[in-house]
Image 1 (cartoon, rainbow, N blue to C red):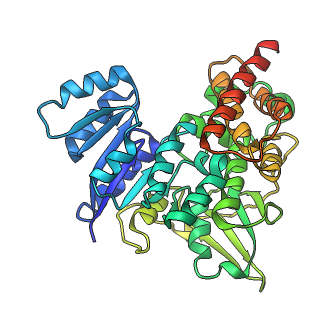
Image 2 (spheres, rainbow, N blue to C red):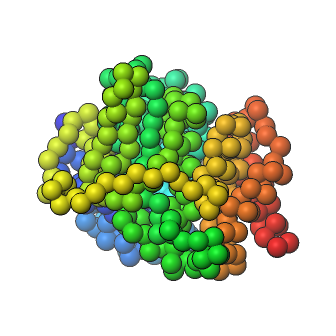
Length: 384
């Protein structure tokens, strides 16, 4: 069966690798929609190659350029995502790949789920910020979420058919580039150092989150919602080789683990072809070449973001949205060299302490909470 897909965030790391997967299986997918922000050249190249029906652009100058460049092609160029639900319906989609980074990617994913369209989800913020809303929509429409993150894909594959027997989840983390640094050395970390990830090739924001272990904290919140497992039974474990992508613990003493090379194209392909599993030409794991597999306990004193995420998840309600928004701003400030590496968790924690949780909310309320947290984070930075 040929699947009609929308690829949201097509110019980013996940988007580009998704298209590499599609190139491996040209007869199985038709790209109906692509979307991007400022990377005009890449978006233009993708539009000319895949000939989607729609190109959605969220940056006005980029929109003007693309509209002119694609004027002679039967491709509709749209500014912004306000009409995304209408566009979804006009192209009869089978799958939406949610690969827009950060909170900006949430509305387009929710719109797909509202229409009952299955989502291959790479945007963890959708679940972290709006997990309760996502569950509510899924219950109403029956739309499925197939995780793209390597860790959640691993759990998804090890879990299928045995959900009732699960006793816990182990989510692996590479530990980032700084796991062996002293506290004094961590204060001297620069953005350039933090972007040099030892095993994975990812976008800037997620690479910084990996270095602080915030990424793992966000993944724990996501796993709680995706797999209905209590926070007390979800643990992060440092695994520097990034070969074991996560593990599921069962009540009978069994531990099912998913192993593979650190290549995001593999979980992307599984999400696209699910429930089938297909061959590809990507490099394969050779266990005889793996010298060792290490597993270590994370140091939450040096990397407090992990515990902040646990705290936000257990408090629930609007606190995960605050955690996410404050972290996005803190990472931006660090990338701009306005704050130090160890100021990231300090800023996030201060914003969390100032937040008064809201127990009854809709998505508009979450947007207000998100906006407040971002403004508050900047205010705190200005007082530092």
